[in-house]
Image 1: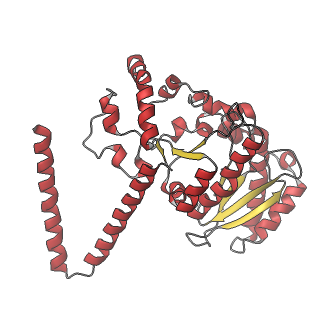
Image 2: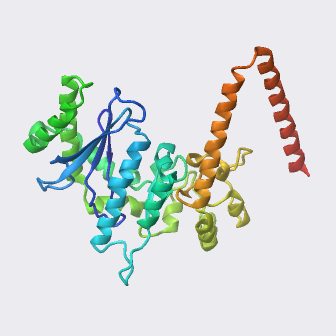
Length: 354
């Protein structure tokens, strides 16, 4: 999106679009954890209903913060799931609600709010599971990235004239919202109003069921197609490897259901080869955002996440403590740490060779 504007939209794999859109605009005058919410903006919707509304959030950066993603889950994702159920979707043949699955890129700022007891209770109450894509695979597995949604929107934005997106109701609504951002210059407010009107017009013209479905179909997520999902891998895997992985899916699914992710050892056990040899820490032991696909609200994932955060804080506390010591003591501790590291490396090599 132009400048420092980000767009959030909730849609399901069948192409239904029910959630009013949410936009995020960077405001450098805000604090790192601040959030300003402007709801009920008339005309800022995904439909041609002149009464349709949307929301604009303001945070310090376009990346958002914990409050931004808490708001998105409480006011966008969970209501969207329940709206779909009320419309008859996400239900079994007998009418009972299915569990719903939502997936994210898995950045820490997105996952952090989901680790609180309050949010975990809400997810459980609404029968919602939240997963993350494998690290650095958004361009291959995120439906909006792989499908035509973003591309179609960007194409629509090109060459627009003011007469194309003119909307008096929306302009008045946006002007009122931007007037409250005192840190913005009058020129910046005017440019943001114009940019938001362009974006709203382009999105309204491209948010269609077939476009929403395309990314899920191309990645094999819905309808489920394991081979199509495997075709997204880089470097590409052979047909023989794809056949083998597909044959192992029942076992792998059970492992994933048991703990919310697959370990490297479990994939080794069924003969899935590594893409490349490495002595780095196994991916299932890395920070959550650097792991393979994982169920974020699984008990084991939450426990591992909190343990990692505790260790990071412990290291920060230790560094702060060391900074208070005399230089000669800091030097002694550094030498001792280096010696310990060398010893552990020697022991690891001996274990590998035995």
